[in-house]
Image (cartoon, rainbow, N blue to C red; front, top):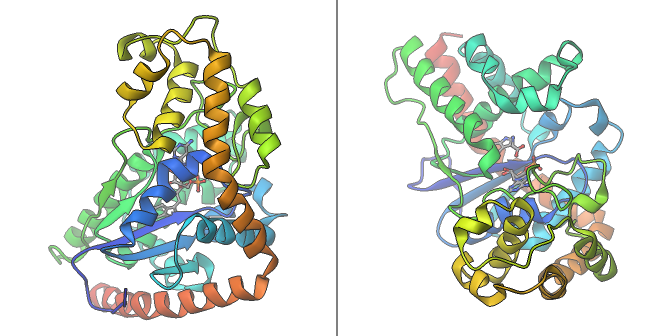
Length: 338
Ligand code: AMP
Ligand code: TRP
């Protein structure tokens, strides 16, 4: 796919934070979608290191995590020949546009963001201003490239709605109807939110202190088998219908992972395992995960050792992203009157 600074019909933008190893939630909720979009669209994927600065816990490992995450998305199937892959901090226009949007967005809009509330928790006063502003930088990422579609997991929906509000208010404030185009979210209909293996009501997350709560893309076969064995369940055999399944979050999550990885619908998975015990189902699930994830894991290890290759991919990606971003920021500055 060749990229131009002109607007194509379909341009995809998405980002992922360099905050440790990716897990199957990232893979099934977002990256799997990113891969298929490469076939027929311009695709731009950013390692959003500026976003990672919002939490102190990410600082020490930031540099290493950029290599890890870049290796992981390439190993999963994002092809540097087809997609732009770049580091957010290497294109200065993201920060520049973020400031403009800081002055467009309203405090009240940000106060509604549930991710900030979750991440800041009880220590709200101690949270960084960056964590509060996080969705504004995200709007800058998207609108800078005039992305038409943004594939994300279910948890980012609210942030995309904010991007839409910012685009509309910018157009209104500066009397430029239709200049910034609000993107369409691309959220998978099924299995858009993979839950923790230890708690079916909590999202699977890189920041969960327990490694047993997630399957990382670079886990070994033994680690995967062990984590599935220890995954939380309930005492009943697996149900024969979706209504019953909905009442049992851990069972729903594990059957969902099975369905998503095997690309079959939930109904079929339910009929395959109905009446079976978890122990039997877990063996099948562990086998399937090993089957799908081990090749990715081997590839991550291979790519990660070649830092020159990763540097080269990111540099070439940044050069291409820069052409689009610098043109856009010039137009924006002109509209503002700078
Ligand atoms: P993050 O790791 O927060 O930078 O997220 C990267 C991408 O993975 C985003 O599109 C998220 O929506 C998606 N994602 C993260 N965790 C999950 C999860 N547990 N289930 C589904 N998608 C997820
Ligand atoms: N906030 C997103 C997440 O945590 C990552 C992200 C940053 C992003 N900028 C983006 C996603 C722009 C889509 C588009 O998952």
